[in-house]
Image 1 (tube, rainbow, N blue to C red):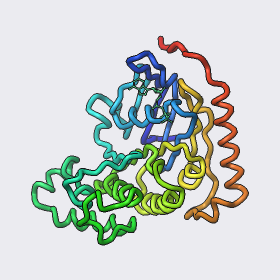
Image 2 (cartoon, rainbow, N blue to C red):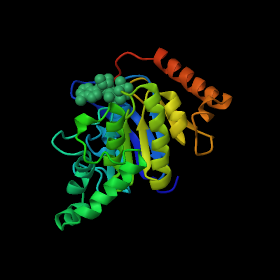
Image 3 (tube, protein in one colour):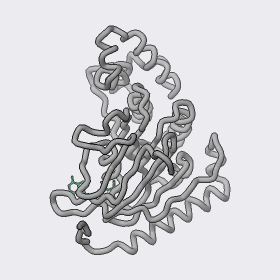
Image 4 (cartoon, helix red, strand yellow):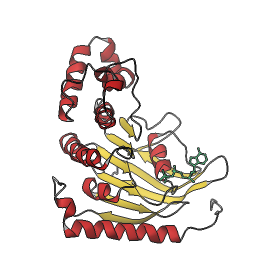
Length: 274
Ligand SMILES: Nc1ncnc2c1ncn2[C@@H]1O[C@H](COP(=O)(O)OP(=O)(O)OP(=O)(O)O)[C@@H](O)[C@H]1O
């Protein structure tokens, strides 16, 4: 792969308490791709997201994002959007203002925000809210929205500053199945129209097969990529297509791979760094 946007090579992470979360892991992701990370609980999926976001430094190995080593100052010039399982919103702001928060923080928008481009930015927020089905909800406060609506707003907030890279950590994990499936379609639509590179951590294998172009299955802790599967289904994917036999077969194969990884769980391992 030429010039991947994300390039983790030989990365190990040992946390303060001695837990070895990753052991000589490699992962390369091309610009514009949609990759899902799946694997047993505690295998190091979120640790990979934290490394890519620059929130954590590796104990050994290299983390390159957008051609630059990720350092203490984060991922350099690559603009990143983040969404987590809990769509925490600032309760004293409206939904529109919450969505606009990254524009107040991230350059070059920050300078424009100060130069009173607020109306233009509010329109940008409104357009995104409409795209996720929240037209007319911009003036509401977070407590007036359901969990699914808040998660839609959180996707808007993650995308408002046109990030090149979108990091999603179980963004639909706390939602009921119907709402979750609705959000898959919305997420696919957002990715198709804006084309950020997406790295999605999920426990939901149907979700990974619906959304991703590539699914990376991790081993038990300390995690490595055990299998890297291309998802062969065309787009747009639909709920109906997620019940097709080839879709069910892929999900079943992933499930078996993870079950194997869990049963091969080793005892505490020593970090193999030079
Ligand atoms: N700050 C920390 N300090 C010590 N250990 C940590 C820290 N963060 C994570 N760990 C441990 O590192 C391992 C990997 O954690 P991580 O959160 O990356 O796993 P995960 O695959 O995302 O887990 P899950 O699927 O359960 O969310 C786990 O054993 C976890 O307990």
